[in-house]
Each structure stands twice: as C-alpha cells, then as structure tokens.
Length: 141
Image 1: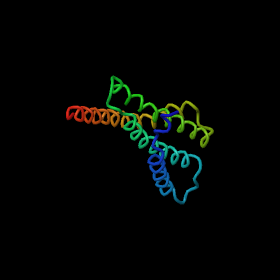
Image 2 (image 1 turned 180 degrees about the vertical axis):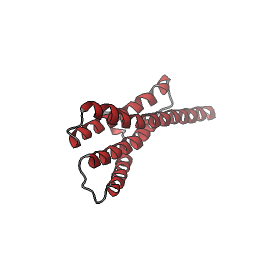
Image 3 (image 1 turned 90 degrees about the vertical axis):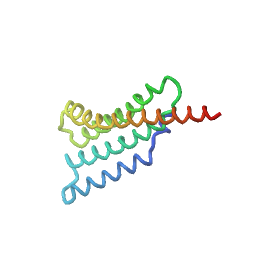
Image 4 (image 1 turned 135 degrees about the vertical axis):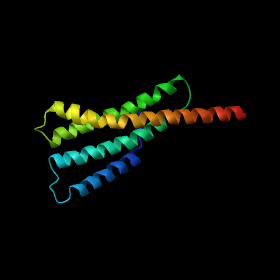
C-alpha cells in the first residue's frame, strides 16, 4: 500500500486529461460513444500510465543493493498491469458487443506493451544516477 502512495497522481492525471481533451477535439462534431469513446479513453489511459510509470520507476529507484537490477522491471509491471486492466474494462463497458479476447489481446496488451519499456528504461537510468550519486558522496567523505 505504501507503493501506491508513490504513484505520481498529478502528472499522470494531467497527461491523461490532456490526451483525453485532444481526443475530444479529434472527435468534435461526432457523438462520443462506441468506438470514439473507447478510443478516447484508451489513449488517455495510455498517457496516464506512460507518464505515471516513468515517474513511478524513478521514485522507486534507490541505487542501493542487488535489487537495482530487479526494481526497474517490477516498476514497469505496475503501469503495464494497470493499463491492461483499465483498457480491457473500458473496452468491455463502451463496446459490449466486442469479444473479450479481442479487448484483451489486441487492445489491452497492445496498449500495455507501450507503457512497459519506457518505465523500465527510466528505472534503470534512475538506478544508475542514484548509484553514481551515492558512490560520489561516499568517496568525498
């Protein structure tokens, strides 16, 4: 539960809201239901978890211990699973006639795969920077 407090809610919400607003502009003049609503929600979800996942991975990095190789991978799983669940649920709610397998395999996994690599890369970069900072501060003493 303490890890949930580390999630960057504000940057994530801003990213999701901006993308949702852009999607509304894209679909201006058309009724926002069905595939249009599903697409807008999916893209906002991807932005939410993409930005949030990168911040989350950077916050989890400590630069200490053997967990430095594992932490970024685990930090990337959080936005991956979150994005997968939200996309599949939103697709099933907005497009009830769509088969679950299509929602899960094409849309859910397709969107979730996008948010995993940036979170992992940022996590490793943050681990490296924090480890370098720790080694430089210990060498000065």
